[in-house]
Length: 303
Image (cartoon, rainbow, N blue to C red):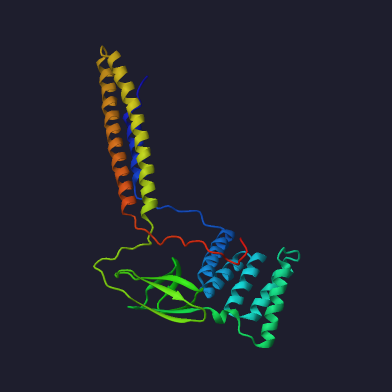
């Protein structure tokens, strides 16, 4: 079998070069429903940790993207926890109007009645018993995480649930600082975190290393496949050259094809090894982001 001409080898090698070039992964744009689901998850996480204003913002964002009646219930619960009785009742009633046969209709109607009676009597809401954390840092402007949930930047004040919380502050060029806080009902707690400068702060959230590593591994696999193609063509050229030793012109052409294929094979193997090493290095140096928050009971309907 006649081996492919040298131009084909060069074309195949160029394919490997293009695949190994720096690349940018362009993910498909999420739909409105997918963005709404992401905002809902953010709101649910904030509701668990206690920053109810943040939960409310996320639920409102989700509702604008996808006006599901479930979100009306969640909005009502967030308003309820924040002590806004009128908005809580309004959203509970909208929820029942949108879902007349809601399985939790009796429970929601009870909440509406109780909230109305509390408004008439001027009774303090449940939100009044929520502990509040006033968080500051030196220097200010640090990103704050409460129980591994993003809360904002210092200085800030947030509501929390009763119990122990881990407050962590991060600021570029400074070492992270962490404090454990025991929050009691109705307490107002001040938390100040001192951030010590460091020579070079690592960016913990850029997140580019992992996709780049996967791209390097994919290009490495392509290089190995290409090396296999070159190996087959080199073997074919060598076999045909042996059978045509009596024809100098044909033998010389086949020998040239064999040399080109062998060179392409070793270049492909070398490129694949280099790319695999690059991918492994990127994974090893990838920084760790904040861990996912542990699950807690959330009195909010599932998405």
